[in-house]
Length: 208
Image (cartoon, rainbow, N blue to C red):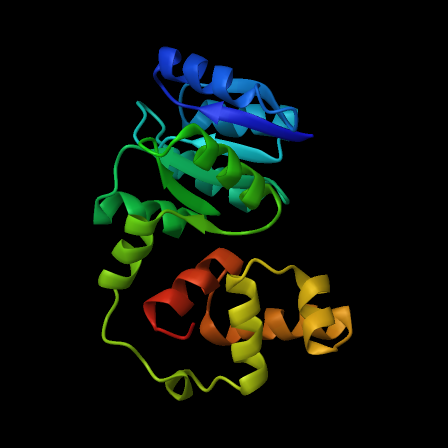
């Protein structure tokens, strides 16, 4: 069962979204928040698997809530669900550590599948957000410019495919500890915080 916390300042939208999600037997909506601060505080208490986070909310927005959750609650995923796809909002969500970014215009099945994917460790971006990330990037870079080894490029490719450490180890015939340490060194080399930032880095620089 995937525990989901909804964060949106419009109560009727939360109610409608909850009605959609509870029809899926694998999803349990455990709470509702009206802004980013409430979302973080409720996430501390309820320990959801996924927080479905709107970006523009009064007082404390989705960027605040996402950042607090990702910095302080290990294992809690944040999937942004919003109506806004402008560059500023997308970049704010990514900088805050969001595990995915989808739009409210998506159909119900797509939203449900996105929640399941993020809960399973896969970063999810709808098509126009993916394009927005690429368009915001500077000119494509050769991986050699970042001093990446072939093994590190393999790590990046598999992370972008949504693989966890165990799956990466299996595909590359490595020990899981070797993968974990290698990814930690890779993040340190590129001065990135987590897998989400690594995926965005790979997209921007045409490494995948």
